[in-house]
Image (cartoon, rainbow over all chains, first blue to last red; front, side):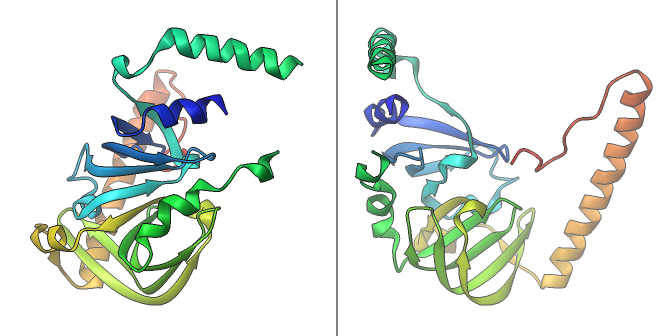
Length: 95
Length: 135
């Protein structure tokens, strides 16, 4: 659940999602669910010549299972907070 | 426990219902249709569906009709912006023409791969994975 919560804190930030088929989509994160399915708004594709079908698409839903990486700005991550939360969750799990 | 978590997939897709959408499948196929229904597994129901193939900036369509896409095959679902769609520099061609170009391109790529594998193999590199093997 931690990563799900973390993604929720990234809402309304610009992220780049790299899919397993090497397609990279950049856009504003609109929503994320428990499967880490992602909704992006105002999207752009890294290599439009290789992916001409994405030209007319402005917002999209990405299935969580096909995501390889999510790239985000370093400033949108509070590492200390995330570490604390990880420890807390690990402790909860032990109980 | 899991049953208590509400499915937010449902909440996030409700605004796409009855819109023209593009669905990209794991095998690389692109489907365009009217988005009618879905569930928490990302199973989709598309009406007036067409399959579209692309070669560079040329494309061709084939009618399919009503289609229920099983969620596991879905890569992405995009809403087609109807205004942007008219401005896109794509040209429609006949299905056979585009298919032939794609096949030629694939054949050429296969040949290039075979040569590359042979050269790399001769100096001890092992070929692992092909395009589209990632899923």
